[in-house]
Image 1 (cartoon, rainbow, N blue to C red):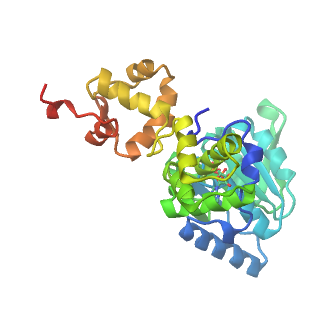
Image 2 (tube, helix red, strand yellow; image 1 turned 180 degrees about the vertical axis):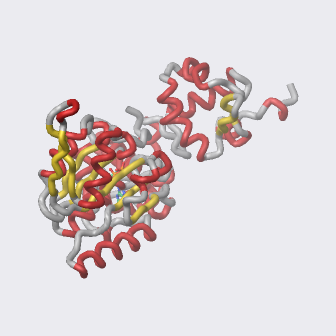
Image 3 (cartoon, rainbow, N blue to C red; image 1 turned 30 degrees about the vertical axis):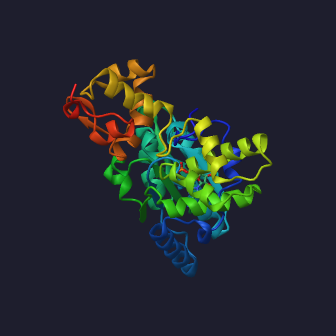
Length: 334
Ligand code: ADP
C-alpha cells in the first residue's frame, strides 16, 4: 500500500506495537484528551469502581487503539479486542462479554459497523452488565438474562456522527481525536527513532513530521521507510538530506501527497480543466477504485484546501493548481 494511507496495513501490527506508548504520560500531542481521560481513570480508581465507558472518535491512525491499550495498562487489567464487522451475530458478542474477567477493558473498534441485534445487546450490557441470551426459536423462544462481569467498553469510530444516539448516550466519556500538529509529530518521530535505535537528526525528524498528514501512524511508517533507506544507502544515520532523498524515492512530496493524491489532482487540472468532474470519471482517469479515491486521497486533499467537493463534482482549488506549479485557466493568458 501507499506509505501515506492512514489505514493500517496487514503486516503493520508488529512494527506498530513496538512503537506504541504504554502509559498516558507518554501519549503526547492530544493534551486535552489525555488530561480528561487521566481524570476519569483516577476518579474510578479512587472509588474502586470500573470507569465509565469511553468512546473515541477520529480518523484512522491517530491513536484510538493505543489509548485503549493505555487505559487497560493504567487500570492494570487485561484488554480484550474485537471490531464491529467481526461481530456478525448477537451470540458472538454474548460469548465475548461473558468471557471477560471482572473489571477488564473491552475495545470495540469500528463500533458503528456492528449488526443491529448486537447493538441492542450491547445497550443492556453497557447499562446493566447483563445480556439476554435467546434460547430456542419461533414462538417458544425465551430470553434468559445472564449476568456478565463489570467491564469498561472502549468504543472506537471514525465518525461519532455515524453512531445511533442511544448508543452514543451510553458512553460516560467521549473524546474526539484531532490531527496532530507539526511539533507533536516531530516529538513522536524522535521518540520512535530512539526506540528503533536510529540516529535521526532533528531537522530530519521535522521533515518526516511535515509530510505525515497530521497522523502518527503515517509518521512512524515514513520513519521506518527512511530508516531502511539509510541502512542500505548510508551508514544508518539519518540526515535531512538523506530523509529527503528517501521520501522522494517513496514519492511522498513536501506536503505529504503521494502518487495517488498527485494523480487525482493532476487528472482534475490537466484532463478536466480543474473540474467539476464526477468521482467515477476521476477514478477511471487515475486507474483506481472510486472508494479508494474517495476514502484515501480526497479527505486529505480537501483538508489541505487543494480540492473541493461540490454538488456538481470535484473541483481543484487555486491552491491545488499552485501545488502542481500550474495556473488556473482564468489566470492564463493563452
Ligand atoms: P487508530 O487506532 O486510531 O487507527 P493507533 O492507535 O493504531 O491508531 O495508532 C497508530 C500508530 O500511531 C501506532 O503505532 C501508535 O503507536 C502511533 N501513535 C498514535 N498516537 C500516538 C501518540 N499520541 N504518541 C505516540 N505514538 C502514537
